Figure (cartoon, one colour):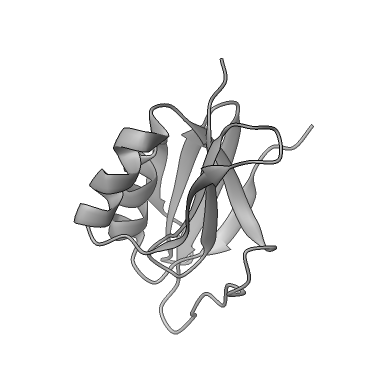
Length: 120
């Protein structure tokens, strides 16, 4: 079972706000023994962990094939709110292969995030 996936971030505060808008809940926001800021965000049953380390920069791939996928509720209403907040939409609202609403956006570090309407 997957515990978490970990990423570097330039701005942990902005990253936590972004994933919070998508329904993520910050479980941890601490400073490590090495002096790095680390946070864990719960998204559904999974976790995303982010480190802000001075001098280290994230290097996400710009292609949508490398991405984080999240179920969200109310994607049709959420997408205009994200745009108004300055979030870049890289693939506009469209049907997923399974027929649900889907869109892709960039997180604050330029990481592709697939938003898929939760069918629950």
